[in-house]
Length: 331
Image (cartoon, rainbow, N blue to C red; front, side, top):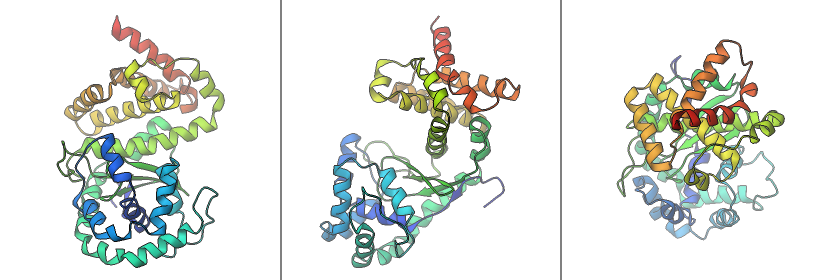
């Protein structure tokens, strides 16, 4: 890893195992209903190779969790706390299926996953190399620290060419903040692009995943600041509010996308910044994103001037200043 590379990129068999089990649940079909998209050849072929094992106890247990709306973040966090390859060493939480760790080991052994991964290794290595190349030219951690404060955790990025194919997963395990990410979606049913094809995608994915975990921790550490912030309604339109009905999700989505926009403009290119702002506007109704950027830039100026001591001081000010920014832009 180069001195500039502030995110460790690696593969992890525990992630690959859960993703292989997920391939045999109804997750792939349901994700297509959310948004139709092309999937990586490895993901599709994994379903075909393992189709005779769809009734394995490990698959049925994962399906039961999904039926109860268990978040993928919790499922992958549990897996990453298990030792590889024994998958023991951690006490299963009350929500986990009984003996799921043993079921996962049996699934790995009986399905021949080790041989399958070896056969597909070139595809996994391509994803790893492409992601390492992109993160090798990035300075994401110091950039995020300039806004969010000191980040003592290690940032880890795991490229995943299996399932889920339509969303990243951000999890905190020990002293690591981990982003598990699929390759960028292409148009329609075309196969996804390589990890090094779209800088805006890989940097957005990482910044949003890590940033949400850091901001969530800040919310928990400063509940009084959050309560003060809640008094100011987020200035978003009905479409955005429908997509993100919870106040916390509105706050984090705007804050994180503002950070992404600033990073793209300062560390990638003005063209990528403009394209990102336009896409968020058209695809997700984030018409206020330029206002978010201006508020965050002003925060950085005030932080350097000593008018804020830390992010905690700014937490209640973000929605207030955003409302002012919106009024100014509509005059």
